[in-house]
View 1: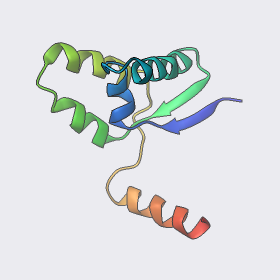
View 2 (view 1 turned 45 degrees about the horizontal axis):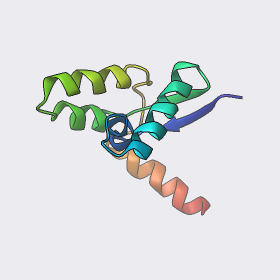
View 3 (view 1 turned 180 degrees about the vertical axis):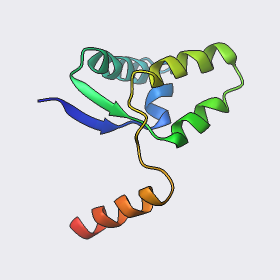
View 4 (view 1 turned 90 degrees about the horizontal axis):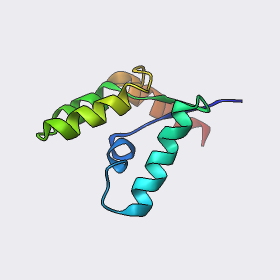
Amino acid sequence: MVSEIYVETSVINGCYSKQVRIASASNLFFDLIREGRIIAHVSDYVLVEINRTTDQIKKNKLLDLVGLCRMDGPSGKQVSDVAEIYVKKV
């Protein structure tokens, strides 16, 4: 069974963290995505945040990781709709 998960910008940035533990965990996570064991989803918000990166080399590396993900995460009203459904279930 393949797991699917929404990925926030901090997970993507984690691959380049100076903290070894964070970088290791984030890179392992993206290895699982490359292997097809996890399907990752990102939203437009992630792209907006990454595009604010002023270091072009880092931005390109981050966008390469985003390229491993499906660009179908919720944004706008969809986010509040998903949150409302979640709150009702909990």
